[in-house]
Length: 289
Ligand code: NAD
Ligand code: MG
Image (cartoon, rainbow, N blue to C red; front, side):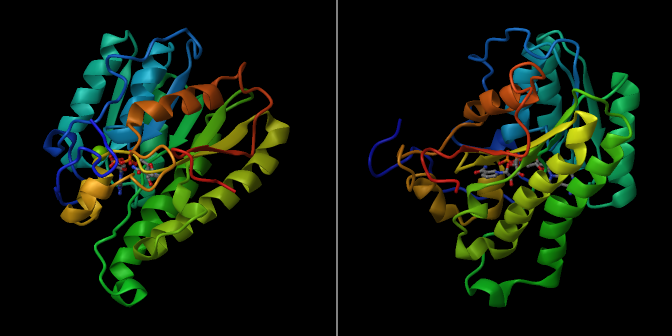
């Protein structure tokens, strides 16, 4: 339960990439609530970072909408990926698991080809894998090149590689959805590198939509606000967790399940047939302009 002072999340900390099983309370990925209406019939999607958090909620919703999915994730996250697969298969959809590090160019390209080969095609790419690091006391002075490499390679390089590779498998009616963030619009000082990648992702989304429009491929982004996922306790200070998400007009953090509707809409070739080059905010009321 939430009240004015407390989001119900106790202090806690993990090391990246973080696991769902170590979180208190457990996030809601729509396991008990998402009702499928066959909005993505016979489609095939690759969701990077689909083991946990927002990616898991998207995987569950897509499966219940009739879409087969492939998930990329880091090898340390096998237990989360296995749990997501259980939910996808329970919905009657196929689930291909592709452990690997997307900051490695060949691994990123191979993951996309494997997804398309094993699913028998690719209609939807969700560029959802992401990294941030907020345990910094002195702002930009604390930022190391190794941290910059990890943030920029995970959030940007991998997105370019997976997108390039996916396009060789996609045709008219396909779509790409990139993960932006409220940080693209209202950056927090400890996330100076991460916020810069999210602003770049908005720009990439608009530019790619212009290039791919003539091919009938749509490109959009979703900008979440504070969402309760493993990324948060794995990259922020333990004592910041009880305040997490309280700085939104809705006065609480969001759950991964609350993102799924935006992704199903944007991926649907009928509902979003004329929607491309835009960023949908799911922020608890914070502005995305
Ligand atoms: P999450 O930790 O559940 O998901 C992030 C995933 O990225 C991980 O599960 C991991 O599998 C994947 N990943 C990271 N580095 C990788 C690598 N090198 N190779 C392969 N996979 C890698 O957290 P989440 O919050 O669901 O994050 C999903 C996306 O949402 C990210 O892009 C994040 O920036 C974005 N986002 C999250 C929030 C939030 O508050 N949780 C807010 C705005 C944007
Ligand atoms: Mg994970």
